[in-house]
Image 1 (spheres, rainbow, N blue to C red):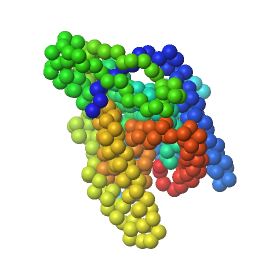
Image 2 (image 1 turned 135 degrees about the horizontal axis):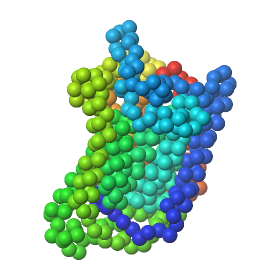
Image 3 (image 1 turned 180 degrees about the vertical axis):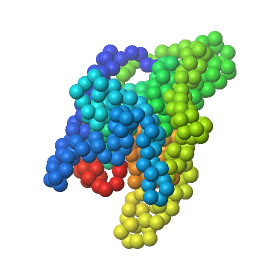
Length: 419
C-alpha cells in the first residue's frame, strides 16, 4: 500500500480556490435535485421541505433535539423503538442553532445538512486531490453529488455531517495531523454508529506508523535513502491544474501526536455507547439491545441474502432482485479496484468497514444505498477514469447522471418507505 503520509510541494493556489470548481459543480447538482423535488412534490400536493426535514429519521433527530433522550415507541409485535438508537451530535447542533437563530429544530437540521454537505464535498476533494490530483478530485466530488441517493445529502439526516467529519479525519491522517484526525474521528463517532470505521482507519494508520518507526534505523523514522512517494497522478489531472512539484521528504510523526490521535479517536463512539449502557442499566452492551429493539444488528449479511432471494419468488420482484445483486456486485468490484490501485490503507480500511456494516446489517434493506453514502473512496476509481477521458465526454456523462439522479431522488423521497 502507499505510505500513510505523502507530501508534495505546497501549491500556489489557496485550498478553497483549488476546490472551487468542484464545490460549484456540487452546488449545481444538488440545486438541480432540490428543484426537481420541489416540482415533483408540488404536482402531488406535498411539501418538499416537509419531505426533507420532517419524515422518518429526521423526526427522531428533531425530537431528541427538542425533548432529549428517553422517548420510545412500543409496537404491537413487541418491538421497542427508542430514540437512544440515534447518536447525539446532529441533535446537539440542531439545539444550538435553534437557540441562536430563528430556526425551528427541523430547520436547524436542514441548515446543518446543507453546510455539512459542502464541508463533506470539500473533504472528499481534499482526500482525492492528495492521492490522485486535482482532476480526479473534481470528479470524485461530482460523482458523490450525483449518486442515486444523493438527495439524502440535503435532508435533515446525519449522513452529510458524518461524511464531512470522516473525510477531513482521513485527510488529517494522510497529511500527518494526528490530533486533528483523532478529534474529528471522535466527532464522527458521536454522529453515527459507523463512526467505528473512522476509528479503525486512524488506529490502523497509527499502528503502522509505530511499526515503521520501530523498524527504521533513521532517527527521523525513514530508512536511509527512502522517500515518501508522491501521490499518484494521472496525466489529465495535471492538465487541469493538479498541484505539481517534487515531493519533499517529511519526517515521520512523533510518537506523542500519533498516540494522542489514537487516544482521541474512539472517545466519541465509546462515550455514547457506555452512556446508553448506563442509562438502560444493561452495561456496555446496552446499545446493542437498543438496536435489537429496532430489529437491527450485524448478522454477516444472512438476512439481506434471504431478502434478496425472496425477490426472485415473483417475476416483478425478480427485476428488483437482479438490480440489487448487480448493485452489490458493483460495490464489491469497486472496492477490489480500490485495492488493486493501491489506495492508501486508511481509505481502504474506512471504505471496507462502511461497506461491511452497510451490507451485513440485518434489517432496513431499502436503506442500504443510503448507508453506503459515506463510502466515498469507492468512487475514486470512477473519478480517475473520468479525469483521464476527454473533458466533453466526462462532463456529458456527469450531467446526464445528474438529471437521472434528480428524478430518482424525487421519486424515491415521495415513496412510502424511509430512505
